Length: 138
Ligand SMILES: [Zn+2]
Image (cartoon, rainbow, N blue to C red; front, top):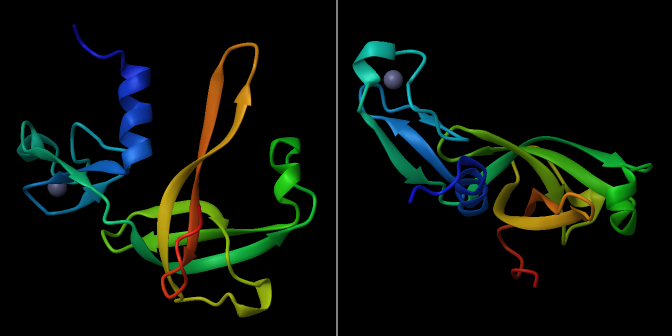
C-alpha cells in the first residue's frame, strides 16, 4: 500500500529530503517531480537527496510578538538560511544572542515540532538552526 501523500511529505520535510535534477544538478526542497528549468529532460531523472543540514544565514530578525503557537519561545530570532545545496529554509535560530548573529554565519539545521492543532491532530514542524561551533541543543 502506498504511503498517503501527506505523511510522505511530513517524512520528507522531517528528514530534509529534497530532489535533485540529474540534467542540471539543481536541488529542490520540498522535492519536485519535474525540474521547471529542464522540464521534459528531467522526466524520470529526478533523484531523492537529503539535505546535509548545513548552511549560512542570509537574513534574520528578532520577533517580539510571535504567533500564539510560539509564545513560549518569545522573543525569538527568525532567520532565512541558504543551505549548501542552494535551497533556502526559514526557521528559528537558537543558542546564540541576537547581538552575535550575523549574515554569513554558518549554522546547522534540524526539524522541530512547534505545536499541535488538537482538534485535527495536525502537527506543525519548523526548522531550528544553531551556530555550527556550539553544541547541539537537546
Ligand atoms: Zn534541471
